[in-house]
Structure formats: C-alpha cells, structure tokens
Amino acid sequence: MLAKRIIPCLDVDDGRVVKGVKFEGIKDAGDPVDLARRYNEQGADELTFLDIGASYKSRDTLMEVVRQVAREVFIPLCVGGGIRTVDDMRLAMNAGADKVSVCTAALRNPELLTDMARAYGSQCVVLSIDAKRVSGPGEAPRWHAFAKGGREDTGIDAIQWAIDAVRLGAGEILLNSIDADGTGAGYDLELTRLVGAAVPVPVIASGGAGSLDQIVEALLPDGGNADAALVASMLHFGRTTIKEIKTYAEQKGVLVRW
Amino acid sequence: MIGVINYGAGNLGSVMNALARLGLPARFVQGPEELVGRGSGRPRGVAGEGATGEGSASEGATGEGAAGKGATGEGSASEGTAGAAGSSGSSGARSSGPAYSGIIFPGDGHFATAMEALDRSGYSEAIREWISADRPFLGICIGLQLLFETSEEAPPVQGREIRGLSVIPGTVRKFQGPKVPQIGWNETRGKGGAKLFSSLPDRSFFYYIHSYYVVPDAPDWVAAEADYYGTYCSAVERGALTAVQFHPEKSGALGLELLRRWAEVYHVS
Image (cartoon, rainbow over all chains, first blue to last red; front, side, top):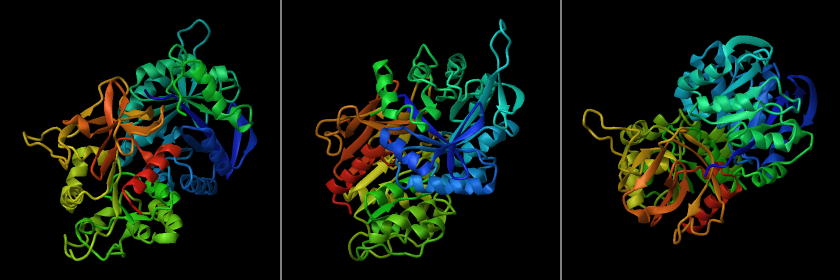
C-alpha cells in the first residue's frame, strides 16, 4: 500500500526560509539547507522549496541550495516559485530537482504544462493552485484559482482548472487554500476532497495546518482524502516534528512510511 | 568503477549523487563499446562531450564532488548523450578485461522511445552481452521494464511488435485504477531467497513513480513485491542481474543501503 506523504514546505527568500500568514506578514524561519537536513532526518517523505523572492539573485541562491541539498538528501525534491518556462524548469532539474511546481505561469499560458510534460514527463510537473472560496453563504460552494501569490482573482474555477491542467500534462496537484494559509485554521477539506475525486493524479493538501488533527483530517478518506500534506509553519517554528505528525497519523489509521 | 548508462532519459544526477555519497566511484558510460570492449581495467574515451564529459572526471577519491558536478551541470543529462553514444564504433578493442565492475541502468522514459535510442546507439546489443556474461547489472525503473519482451506502453505498430531487450521472458502492463501513475512510497516485501531483498525489514518503503509494472513469465524472477491495484513485481533477480521498479536513489536511508548492499554483494567498486 502507498503511504500518505508528509512534505515540509520551505518558502525561501534570498537564501532564508520565511513564512507568512495569509501570504503576508513574513517571519524568518532559518537556513534552508539546515532545515532540509533536519526534516530529512525526521522522516520527511519529500521536500518542497518555493522561491518567494522576486529577484534573479534570489532564484540563483535557491538553485545553489537545491544543489547542496541534492548531494546529501535522497528523497524527492520539488522546486517552485518563479518558474515560467521550460528553460526555468531545466535550471531547477539540473540543480537536482525531481519536479517543479508552477502556478501563475500556467494560468497565463496553460500550454506550458504540455511543454514541460513533453520535456521531462508529467511526473515532473506539479500544478500549484492557489484557491479561494468565492461563493457566499447559502450558495453552492465555488472556488477560484488566484494568480500572483494570491493577489489576483483569475475568475477561473479551481476544480475545472485542476481537471484541465491534468489533461494538459500536470502530474500532481498542489492545492493551496488561500483562506487558510498560515492561519492555523486547517486545510479546506471540502475543496481537497472534490479536487481529489475530479483528477486521476495525487493531490497534496496545503495551507493552514495548525494542529496534528488538521493534518490527519486532510489525509483521511472521510476528510480531505489527500495523498499528501504540505506542512510549513508548524514545523519551522518547532511546534511539532515529522515524527510526531506520523506517529499521530498512524494512530488514526493513516498509513505512513517509517 | 561503476558505469552509469545515460542514453538521455531523465535526470541522472541523483544516481550519481547517491553513489558519491556512498563513496562508490562512478561515471557515465561513454558508449556501448565500453560494455563489450575488454579494455585495460579502466574506462577508455575519457574525453566525452557535454554533460558526460564533466562526469568522466569523477574518479577515485575525487569522485564525490566531481560526480555531483557532472551530473547536475549545464547541458543536462537529458541532452548530452547522443554524441557519447555514437562516438566511436562498436567493440573495437577486446583485449583485456571490462572497463567497469558493474553497470547501473537508470532513468524514466517511454518504452518505445527508449528502445529506439538503445537500438540505434548500439546499447541494446552491448547490454544483452553484458548481462549474458553474468556481469553485475542494476536496472532502475525503465531500466527494469526494458529488460522484458513487450510493453503495453508500446503496442505493435502496423502489426509489428516493438521488442524490449528481451532478457527476461514476460511483458509490461499498465496499472488499472483511478490514480495512475503511482507516485509515492510503497511498502515493499522481499521474497525468501532473494539476495538483496530477503532480508528487507518489515514495513520497508521505497519511492515509486510509474504507470507500468513488469510481469515475468516465470515467478522465480520475482525478488520483491508491492501492492497497487493488486500485487505486482517490484524487483527481479537472477545471477548477477538485479532490477528494481522503485528509485533507490530517492528512497532515503533504505535506498542508499540497498545500493550499498548491491555493490557489496556483487563486488562492485
């Protein structure tokens, strides 16, 4: 049986791991290589690095981080943030990434997913969706995909976008709930479950883990039924460890890898 | 010296990084003639091109840094091979002993595209010869699937079958279920008597990423199994031939340990 994955997410800005709340209010959380090592030792199933810096310098610094991590950490590495072209993807893959994630660039140019899948295979292409609930109280639930780090409403239905993106070449969906990001209010279980049922590829729940229960809920079949959970603040600020998350998940009946 | 076959499928940097981490000297094979030629005990044709050229600098004590650099350098493992593969003819010098003590054949890719590249470059024949001489061989992912005769990924074209390396009688099938490919860590059970797998601890998880799985005709090829929409063969063994569906180079400490044991059991160094 396939284990559910616990994936630490490192938002990196110019060589430092940072973490914000609802995409704003950034706090420093440490050195990315140190954190990658630590999470690997704790039993992380994969690592995600997102470049949230705006400059080329920030990106080059992140590539150096990935290169260093790839030499000593032997689990899958995903790199995202500012990847707009197949050439950008190649830079990340050559640095040692196993896959890349794209968000805004794919919304602007959906064919990018196809080009990336042709170049490296869909297993290397992760579509990141920043979704926000746009339906009012009493209405049928609807979510839109947002661009530019959650600042721009594209008006595109998030679930339909997931379906289209997989058809175009995405091999995994990283589903980030903007409503919940960094607030500790929990993942959006309903959205996670709906996207998972709509696409034939793994769904990684992201955004808003504030407690062990919330992580486990995202993974349980009657919760979010996600294949993996992305965890950031809770780990970076030492509120929990991968081992603690996995031990708890296992107690609740989730298959985890040791 | 371990030879890593790079015919242009996927990022092989992690395999080189893992071998470097284990202190096992490795370089990219420069062409099929290195598998059939019996050189002086060390690789010939050191002056490769592109990505493979840098990789070739990684010998002995300097292996760690250089292998990592070569593997991840510009030009990329996925592009730099055509030149190397086609560089110098076949089996020119068969004078004295093989260049490598073991061969690793990793990568992702499409069955038909990969076979076409192997046939065209002369690797098909060289790999078959290497394996039939019972020299240590480790196939990873597509490097397992290509050892079989046929694959559902490459159905017959105009009635003509697309043949794999056909070292192992059997075929390759596609998973039937709602989520394909399988991506993630799957619990893998070794079979009793298998050299590398019989001693796998309970609850051994390896990292898999694939849509197709192998079905050997003879069950005694099966060295390990896992479950995904049914039980499937995730590793084969016979003589000095080992091949695995998962990625040991991405399977954490357990994966590194498996690579280390492969080198130890088959005296590859």
